[in-house]
Length: 389
Image (cartoon, rainbow, N blue to C red):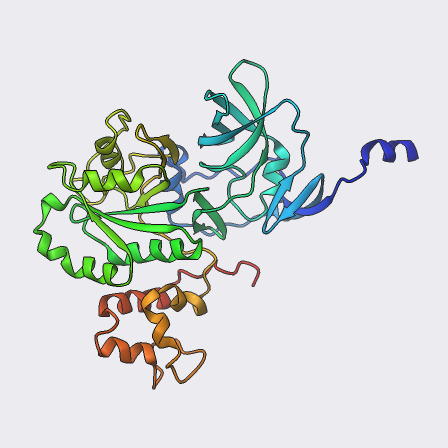
C-alpha cells in the first residue's frame, strides 16, 4: 500500500479542492428544448428559465485535483510541456474547439476532462480567445487541450448563476448598436460600458445603419457618451460612411464585437475586410428584432492586422460580478459628485443632499444616463453578482 501511495504522489504536486458534477448518470429529459436551442447557444441562454427539481446526486460535490495551482481566481493545471504546442482558441462547439497553433495551422481539439472539473464557477472551461497548451493526438490535425493560460480582458455576463465568458484576452470591445432596425437602446450600451469598465477593457461605441435615420436625431446620445470620455463612431455599410475610421480602430488590436442581435456586426466586418465573407442576415419582419446569425463566438484574423471576436447577438445582458452598491462607481460622470452626498451609502435615488441628484438637476450629469442608472438599480440584474451570498 505504501508503494502505491508513493507511485501516485509526485514531489511538488499541489492539491486543490474544486467542485464537480457527476457526469455518468442518466439525466432527466427536458421536453421543452427544440433543436434550434440545442444548436444556438445564445438563444438557449436567453430562453425563460423554468422551475425544476433536482435530486441530491446532481448537487455539487468536491474533489481534489493534483498538480494544479491558483492564479487569482483561476486554476492553472501543471502539465509537462514536452510535446505540447501553444495556440489560441478560434471557436468552440460543445466539447470540441478549433485551436490555431504556433505553426499557423488549425487543429480540432477536445478538452481534457480535468479542465472541465477545474472550471468551478464558469459555464465553459475553454472559451473563444483563450491561450491554451495542447498536445497533438491521433490524426494530423487533432489534439487535446491540456491547459488554459490565465485570462485577461474578458467580456462576460451572468447566466443561470454562473459567469458566461463571451470572449477572452481582448484589449478592446466594440459595442455595436444600430440607429434603427432594431432601434437604438442606450441602456443596453450602458451595460456593456459597465462591463468594459469592470474588466478594464477599452470600449468604443459604434452606431451602425446611420443611413436609415436623420443623423441629427443621434446627437443627444453621441454628446452624452462623448462628454464622459467614450469614443463614438458612426457607420453605414450601405454608403460606406465610417468604414475607414472603424478599420483604423480595429487595426493591430484584439477586439470583441458585441451588441444586440441584428445590428449588423458581421456586415460591418465584411465591409472593413472583404476577405472575411461572414454569414449575414436581416431583421425579422414581424418582430422588428434582430435574428441570431452568428451562433458561436469566433476569433477572426483581419487581413490588415489584428483580430476580432465576432460574438453572437444578444437580447438581454445580465451584469456579472458587479454589486448593486458599486454600480455608481462605473458611471464615470458620477464620481466627482459622489463625495458631495451626505450619506456614505447613498443610492442617489431618494436621499436628500445627494451630490449626484444635484448634478442631474444642474445639467452636469445627463438625465438619460441617470435614468439608465436608476433602471439598473431597480431591475433584478444583480441577482448573480455575489453567488456566494
